[in-house]
Image 1 (tube, rainbow, N blue to C red):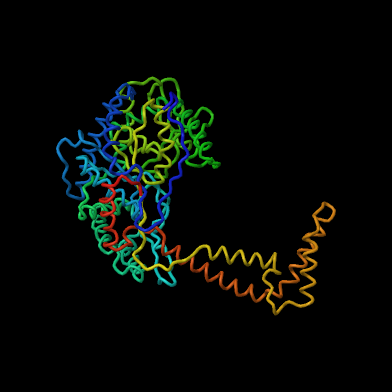
Image 2: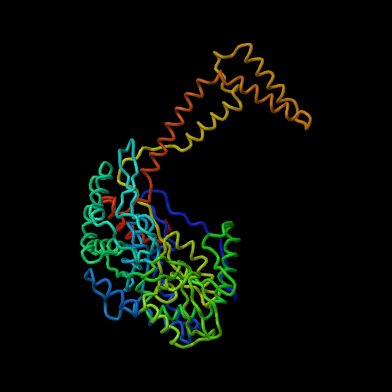
Length: 544
């Protein structure tokens, strides 16, 4: 690490394609080393947050997190937590409250087993500040020969809003989702886990009408029945922790510095990784007049549409705004070192105003303050190459190391093998028929006319191209090729039919081999392979 922080390294992270394969880096067997290194490093860092040492604030943050996660989890499921849990390693992963694919679910199994192995506490963050766009699930159906995919609605569409605010609109549609989705996939998977899982979701619907909570709590109860020992807590509740408010107050106090580090690091990331888009991996933080964009969302219960937060410094105060109709003034000096700044954020939260972190800030807080080991998926690991640099350059500390984990589990069905190269070969032959029909000319169509055309084409091939003859040469080739087309028309028709068949086979394969289907669409026997996969990887030093 240089004084300016670690240098970017170009890394290509890809989820595995093979059924049952995993991407785990570093191996799970090295998790204990990562935990110890991260805990030791935190205690050695000289960083202060609002005048408080990083290590002390992190200790308090973990205590607050565990207490809140225990209260939340016990509201819908029995859970045992060892005494002194806050002094033990804390392992964290997170995802939106969705019916995600098995590669994402794999993190929950790893989280539980690693915490058990290292006498730690496993906590899954429910990322409920993300927005729900379409309350539906892509479900395959049809037959193996002619599969289809349908979007099965779990609820009626509504205004786009964060999961935290999203209530179930159509009760009957939600109640019938399990039956409709099971019927759709029945020809391929007769007994999907959905038949057992959805009643658990509906049991939570009796207690809460929040769509994301119903799904996440139902899944978590299922995990408990399968022997997983984890706590869960929505990010919205983490944002009410005093430690998080201290973190945000620190960021607001020094936003100008953070803004510069963020955008310059982002530009360097794009350059090193050859990213041209200004929107990837995340957009720059904007500057409008004397307003600086902060990496936070803002909304309220009355107006649940999340908007970007802008901040303007005014002496020893900062003004928060969504640049629409809301402005809030807080007393947070640039060199603020007292808890009163964070207390103002508590008052805002009590009034119904929501300040929520965006993606990079979420994992930054979780890794620096809450966890001794964070488990990422492929997407999060890509983003956190940037987060590492931000942590080092803004806070001046070594970024905690994380573990990247994903996997692929395909539907338990027979899938016809398809060679994608056949489409390329057929397409290539069709192209040759257009530009080099003489190569494929059937013997039955060779006569004096075609022989003369081929001879004329050969003469033009042997004639060097010059500026003077370029157009005449081009038109001659085009005319000769067109004149030879009737002779290869039957071959073309046969190849076009073959190409359509091959493309249909590829479409079928794409449907049947997708790794993106929700875990609950698989049968239980197939899904329990996740337990075996994690058990095997815990004793292996090989990244697979």
